Amino acid sequence: IEKFPFRSPVKSGTVSAARVKFKSAEQALIALQKDGHGIIKETDIDYYLSVPGLAINDHFQAVDNYGAFSNRIYIMAVPYIGGFNPDYSGLDFCEEASKIIMKSILAQK
Image (tube, rainbow, N blue to C red):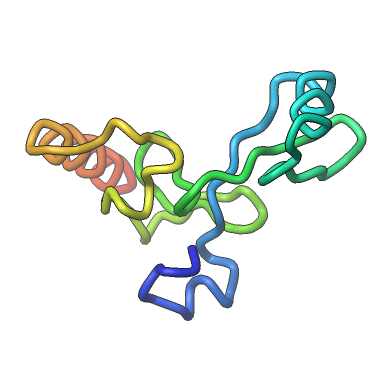
C-alpha cells in the first residue's frame, strides 16, 4: 500500500492494506510466539496476517478500511494484489480477471 501511486484513496481509507484472517486465535498465538512479524491483533479472537498489497474482494473491487467494497474502484494490477493471490500473472489471468470485472460492472446496471 505504501507504493500505491494514488495517495488520495489511501489517505481517505477507500483502499486498505491486504490482510488475511487467521481461522483460529490459537493458530495466531502460535505464529505470534514464533515470529510475530506481520500479525495484527484486532480483538481477543480476531487476528490477521498482513500481506503485501491492497485488499480486494473476489470481483477485484477495492476494499476500504471498514471492509466495504467499492463499486467504482477495481484493482487487477498484479503488484498491488499479489499478497492475496501470488499466483496471478500472464494473459490467462488478465482475461479471466477482466471477465470477472465486467460481469460485476454490468450487474450494477
